[in-house]
Length: 277
Image 1 (cartoon, one colour):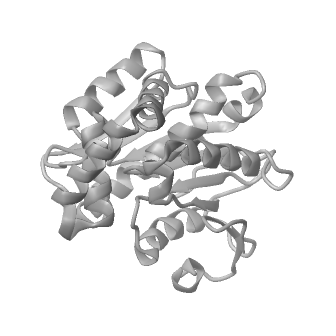
Image 2 (tube, one colour; image 1 turned 180 degrees about the horizontal axis):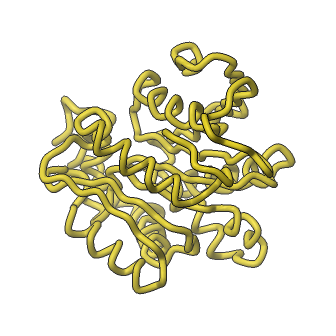
Image 3 (cartoon, rainbow, N blue to C red; image 1 turned 60 degrees about the vertical axis):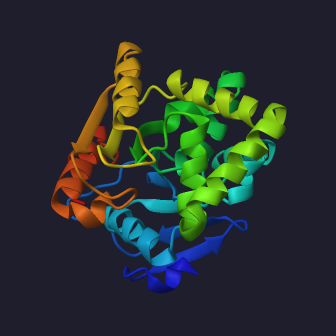
């Protein structure tokens, strides 16, 4: 379990389901934090094929800041058969609306195709906006690291590279053939996800980490998306590098990454006082 390598004392891990784990910190608070309401909850959506040790680094950042962390992992089947991904999005909503979390202010941090999983959540929200209005209001910010944005072909490339790096080419080809054969059950769902992302029901401030040499995340498409969000009145922050690593910006540019992340989280004022990452 990921909890074994998290280097923060006093953490308890609750396995909510096969892919959802809740990390709670009852023993420490970040320096200069005075909590006046429910403790903020980070919804962390890792990239496909992520290793526990890599994800733990992000959990530690937020746990030390004063957040509890809900890690929502994705499976390749959620992507290859989007109907299951949509069902999974509904389960995530049920968890966020459960008694344990219903009063928690939320911050979302998704990586790569983890953004696709969050898009499934947003699809449900957009279709039942009144039912989920209170949840939308609880989302104070959303962060996208190496978002796989663009065409279905780019998403297929993402699956191949994330899950089968040594067979990326063949996997991409088979995936695209599969998408064409089952268009009604795949591509049409992807298009719905892309549309809801461009017209997101979440209007809280957003932050994007991306780079120009990422084969899975088109930097110009990210710029178009963020520009479109800004026309909808969404406050958008960006950190763009000329060269970096897909879902590895923290490792490649630690100082830039942490400073940008700290400034963004601080601006949300989730704790009432400034907390240092």
